[in-house]
Image (cartoon, rainbow, N blue to C red; front, side, top):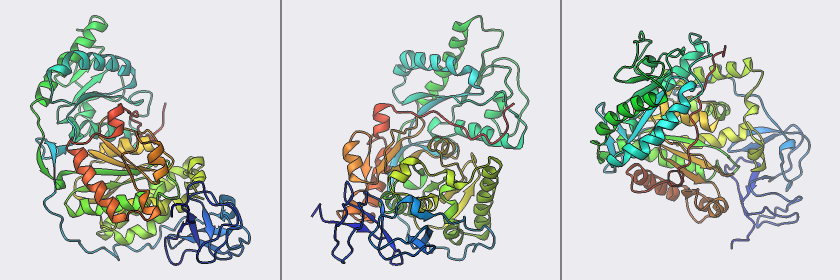
Length: 514
């Protein structure tokens, strides 16, 4: 029955479990195994299954998530203050490619209707992307986009939308500092995202440090003077006033819209998908319902030959010892360690550490610390071998499961995955978020039925049935797999696309600002 007291114990070695029942369970609640609650335990929060002495390990997912700050009697609420966080796993002497999962049987015959590009990539949307080389031009581009939607788009019915790729970078920065490579390659690779169909255009001011040519070609080519076939410079002397600037942008956009309008959806194998995975507003159910279901779907996609990315360095760092053995090769394992070490140093220089990741909402949802959060987060990666590693903003160049290094910030992670070539994203949430991207559809999966019911017009799919026993991880994983194919084909529209919910591109800039 729905009101039967329930908890979830992930691993037989766990000495804590999370309460399933909505609203939590009151003090005195008894379970069939004889456990009686000594405290009220909120939904998603931990109850200990045995007495835990001060200093003894607290185990969830079969891993130590901390040690007891004091004696915790059996049946107690193991709230955050009782869990002392352990140190991060050492990056020295980690096993590399020692437990590479064997290849699973190929999954054949699954297709979607996508937009094939000249370079062989396939988009899930048909968009005109207008890149900007500096924040100074953002207002002008926004004005031009309104005009394009009103005056030009109705003439090109095969084009879904026009997207302004605005950002806060471009000038007032140390453009040659080593850290500047990250935002520059991010912007360059977003311009190349398959959903933009290989028809790039850039709006520039003309005096900024980030030369617009750098967004259109590898390296740092010398700038040209004035407007070019791919670049509108607002400072070009041919522009006599604001009206001329807008006219130049619309003229260039019109030519690209005509090309994009020739694109039509064609049947493509599922192998042509590039799917990003991410979580935000996580809770203690994330690691037992939504993220494992995403991991199962990720395995299906890999079996079908597709590319799947998982990210968020600080939500991987505490599980790195579980991932390096899954690396397809020792070089891939070393690349994982490289990204963890780089981010450790980045946080150290900022006088922060990985514990800064966990949010107040994560803790209200039952996550005691970043260790527990990370162990649940990596479930999105499924069980496939890790085929490659990308530094922030690098473009993916292979199939299979890929670790794309990003911060855990929802907006920065989404931006970097777009740069890496992601054409559809799956986003899990336990607390809820209206997050969305203009450049790619975002499927939002709830960890709990209560959230999907309350946010019925924002959540696309629920994994809550896994917690109540109504569905299995495999059931929800297959449901998500088919939903991915439908959304990629344009047969289903995500709620974020339905409402037009769009978060701004947010660059990761580890370089100095002048």
